[in-house]
Length: 480
Image (tube, rainbow, N blue to C red; front, side, top):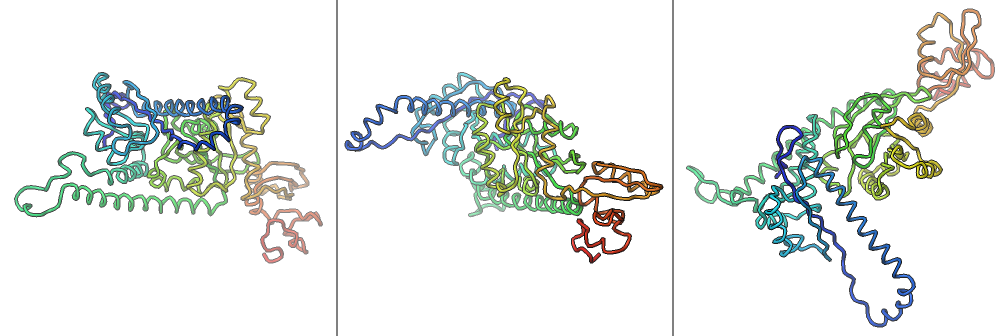
């Protein structure tokens, strides 16, 4: 589907010409009466406000172009040149208009570009017309992102998800893609009406899509079975989400010491990583590192990566990791929340983690701290303990409770389990027993209910009487 050509693993032969288009719709002319009515307000406010609006539009285009360059670099291409056009609306035939297409053809020839990349999605008609009139390959934004995903897919699941997205993107764009697509099959036994090559290719792609979906469904079932086994033991999941290149994998390594790939390139993480970590309360949680989001993330990718993104849907708490040093961090936040909305998880508890604060000046860092944000730097190892404490406070599954126990010293395995999984508040040795008060997960403390001390009688719960009626962990008090 027109992927970028490379040599080796990281080298690239492609010279890419970048095309960025900004559409600013022209306003319809106002009637004379409306012009007179608004003239005074325009004189008072239009100057400064108009300048701010124009600056904001220019900033949006600049930030989009910076991000587009990063995408091209992540795809392994060399930037040969750039062209920017502002139009009131897209040209239905070529997106940029016939005059700009001629200019683009000349620039591609002079820079010896091997591929032209559009920071915009092209319709099948636009893509076909541009390929007919330009001297090299043409790729749009979605094709570029799909190429980067294909480059970084390592596991079988990731490769299947990328292939599905590529096939679904390719299917409506087959018509006119080369003469071979529109000629009848030939050869002995094939003469007659037959079917066009286009129909054959479309049928093959549809058959492959069904096969890939079936394979992915099998992967999803296996992942669901693994999740059910995890859920049988009450270990909650916390998922890292955020814009691509916000530092999620670096922060994941700082929290887990897992050593997963850290890269400044976009979409370095495609396959979810799960790692158990221990919180200050001694509770264990599973931390999940997920694929990053981006502006105008192709919908085919969201649907294709459904199995991967289920980790986000099943998580109890989401950590929205944001690049505090990015000048467009508010726009990035809006894009992430847009994708979270598509996944139906906006109602989940979310903690905003301002990452990369080591790149901020002291004044800006102090302002963020005063706002109550969680400040971290995965690279410098800053803010890890406060972040874990906030996660601990947000979790509601398997709550932390405090309980007193009287345990025979001979029960070394019970003492070891409580010492490893709970926080010791108080401990006294009385004869051959240990009286201890601990704070820990209800699931852990509930395993040793026979050694619990009743708050009213001061005796172990299993020692008789009606102490069982005061069991804080028993879902049906008095009916064990």
